[in-house]
Length: 297
Image 1 (tube, helix red, strand yellow):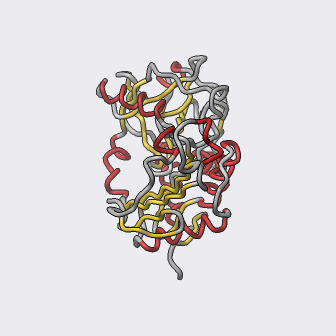
Image 2 (tube, rainbow, N blue to C red):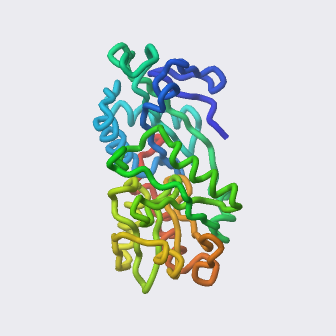
């Protein structure tokens, strides 16, 4: 359920009254950036790392952020407080601004537009996926290479991801896995991909994938468990012959993938390493040790 209050350019508006111009570059060109944040037990998980990536994306895109990182952090937390958000999803979004149509007219744009939305969600809503796993389709649509748009940027233009997801849904699958232009595994439509094989955790290198914050957390947890981790190119062969496969993302956490294009992964059920990592991630999130508190103690 979307929260009642939306932050728009320094002010709060009821969700049904919040407005952004139809001439905003995010609407006209998909010209903007965003972050996806998870709130757990009254804290925003790894907010500092998300803010860092948000501002790196802005620098790369040459978008002048109207708020300092500290002010953006405060705005995100205030949005969560106004909506009474303890568990759910948050999305801070920034567009290049509003102005005449035509890329040549960019010099006439207003200051960047800032919108922050909160959405109430419960872990119980995703329980079936965690317990039973999901089925993935290898999309024919390839991941946009970093030579075209650096994959480290969390751009508002998600057409590449959306078309891959639609292809998977039309084929009867729950999720999509995209390959890079060399045919190696890149990532999901909005998540990173891991495999477990021979007691080691495998994941593709950053290069043509988004360096996910949850991916980073999973790798830190694996290190603490003395679970060997290999960051290397992965093929479809590596996926379908692995003992376990899962994806990671801010809102979906760790989701077991038990089938890839009709081929059963392992015994067709969520594996022990996936479960162990998910329990550790959930405990870290719920503890608040790496979260920014929404409410005062």
